[in-house]
Every structure is written in structure tokens, then in C-alpha cells.
Length: 312
Ligand code: NDP
View 1 (cartoon, helix red, strand yellow):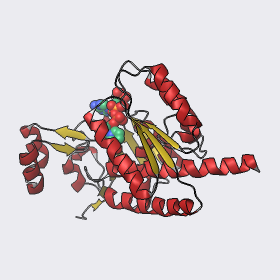
View 2 (cartoon, protein in one colour):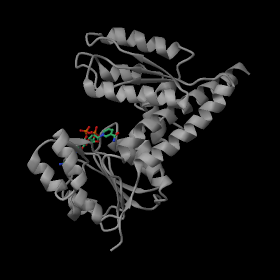
View 3 (cartoon, protein in one colour):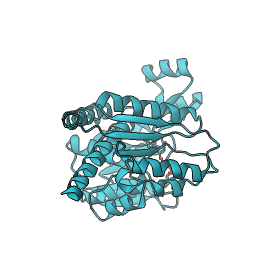
View 4 (cartoon, helix red, strand yellow):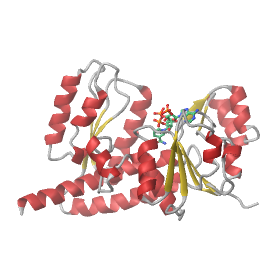
């Protein structure tokens, strides 16, 4: 039996970051420093970790970053003023609002207040529409990372059957759209899909973005398929750990030490059936920050180009 190829997200992310750093250095030589503003409301521990690593990566790549940390009690109106100010600032090319926001603020309204040209998360309806109509757009980072993994690993997309399980606005839907734009034949599944295994077994490329540990089992996978696991689920239950990772000495050691481990939406047993797969951790998740950096660079270049045309 052929051994499945591991699609190494960490290596691909490093490659992308090195390319971004090179381009940023060229811009720096011309006195241009791309800038990213990250808004982090309140003190959600997980969000703080994400934001810190985004800011750190900016520093490594020569991108200016500014972290804005309003208190949990900030109102929608105050947030709107903050965003308006960042939209107008010349030194800021990208604006990222770290989600989730507190329940009392109107997240949708805030995301729509970000200038589409600075919307490095690709959540603004203008960018969603541009992506759908195949125009240049700032695309959401996680799905954009999936496409990079496939392309850079030499996995053909055009003409292949791609099945995306999950239809969220931030992962499932844009991933489906990007696979369609790359000429795959795309099926999108969700919790109301009838006979899901029958559909997933048709997939040459199976994207799992569900949020349920090990949900995709070996029986749901077509032999030789490419498995893209977007899920990030923390498990702490020993029986659940045993079910998925029994015999994995490295994981067992870490689980004993930390009392938890991270698993994707695909049962690791399914990897043996596949032709290639993204591991968790070290797969899709590793690409997200690299794609954010790439989007910030793209936004910086597009804004400078637009300014040059306007000034000509
Ligand atoms: P959401 O909860 O927004 O969406 C989950 C989707 O899965 C929904 O469309 C839902 O269907 C579908 N679903 C749930 N149960 C089933 C089922 N039994 N059968 C079929 N479909 C089902 O999650 P996200 O898209 O935000 O995230 C998905 C996963 O990806 C999570 O584990 C998250 O942590 C991870 N993630 C990882 C990122 C990364 O950087 N790697 C970034 C973002 C997310 P329905 O619409 O019908 O409810």
C-alpha cells in the first residue's frame, strides 16, 4: 500500500513568509512600510495568544503592527470611531478585528465598517462578492491557506471532485468558492446533508471544517483522496484520547503532561486511507498567519498603486 503524503503546513507557511519578507524588504527600500492594525477587545486568553503571534510575525517580516486593546465594555459606536480612524490612516494597510467580540457589540456592523481595501481578513461583503465573481479580492486567510497547500504540494484541483464539509462564512463557504474558482467540481455539505458518507466518498479533495473531533472516519474517505483538515478541537477526555491516539507514543507523553491534545475534524485513522493529508497541528492552522501577512502586503501594494494612479 502506498504511504500517504503529509502536507506540511509549517514548511509551506515558512516558504510564504520568506516570500512576503523579500517583497516587504523591497518596499522598505522605497520607504514604504506595510502596516497592520489589530484590534483585540477585552481579555480572552486564546485571542491574546493569536494576536501576539500575529504581531510577532509582523515584526519578523518587516511589517509595522499596532495592537489596539479596548476594554471589554467598549460600545459599538466607540468601535466604529476607532475603525473610522484606522480607515483614514495612511500608515495602516490592514485592519483586523480579532473575533469573537463581546456579545453586546454588533460584530456584523463593525466588520462592514472596515474599508474593503484594508479588510485583510476578507470578511467584508465587497471582498466576499469580489471573490465570488472571480475578481482580485482580499480572501479569508484560512481558505486561502488551503489553496496554497494544494497548489504548492502539486495536487491538481481543476476537474477534481472537491467536497467541503461545513458552510461557515469564514471557512466552508469561501473554501468552496476558491476551489470552484480553481475549477474543481464542488459540493458543500452541512448538518442537514443526507447520507454524508456517500457524498464524502466521492471526494478527490475532502475539506473538513466542522468543529467536531475526528468526525470524518476512514469509511467516509475515498482511497487515495487528499484530506484537508481545518478543525482545531481540544480533547481532554482520556477515553476519547485512547480512541484516536492509542499507540501514538509522542502524543501519549504530551497528553500525560498537559492533560489535553489538539485533534482535527478527521479521525487520524483515515489518513492511512488517503493519498495525502494535512496533520493537526502543523497543517492548515499553520498557514493562517502567513496568509494574513500576504494579505497585508497585497493590501499595501494595491493601495499604493491606486494612490499612484489617482495622483498621476
Ligand atoms: P462553524 O461552527 O461556524 O461551522 C461548522 C460547520 O459544520 C457548519 O456549517 C455545520 O453545519 C457543519 N456541521 C456541524 N455538524 C455537522 C454534522 N454532523 N454533519 C455535517 N456538517 C456538520 O465552524 P467554523 O467553520 O468556524 O470552524 C470549523 C472548524 O475549523 C473548527 O474546528 C474551528 O476551530 C476550525 N478553524 C480553524 C482555523 C484554522 O486556522 N485552522 C480557522 C477557523 C476555524 P450547519 O451550517 O448546518 O450548522
